[in-house]
Amino acid sequence: MPRKLEHTYYGAVVALGHATLSTRGLSPGQAIAEAMGYAMGGGLGGQLPDRIEPATHPNHRKFAHSASLGVGVALLLARYGPQVQLQFRQVGEGLMRDREKYDPESWQWMAFSLLGMLAHVLAGIVVGVPIGYLSHLGLDHVKSSKGIPLLA
Image (cartoon, rainbow, N blue to C red; front, side, top):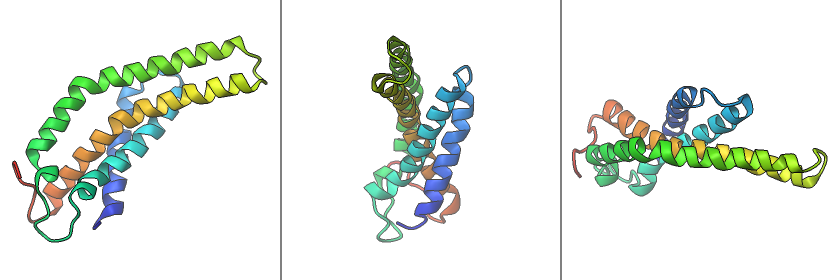
């Protein structure tokens, strides 16, 4: 995959930029966990178009690299991203509350803590992946002489 590292890096950076805005109001631990998820999701999302349509020739850009799919991804992100993210956050907060039933030195307390943080990481991933995908389309449009197709 040409420019894999570039797409991974920019996907993660753009997603982290979004994380700085969307994690305000969270505790520092929750914000860090979500930022990690954003970076992982953004890096993965930055690779997705070339994983779906490998760059085997200069005209490899079809539907997975199209502006129409990019608009669809952006609309889905705007419509469902905050809801799904909120659900993961609520699960994480519930797990963190449930851990208080146990002694801080017990394995149960540790398990609830880890699962609570994992829920926050997933809250970042679910939004980071589409952001990374969009960053890939943006980079291809700007940096490639071929740009991206409107439809396919």
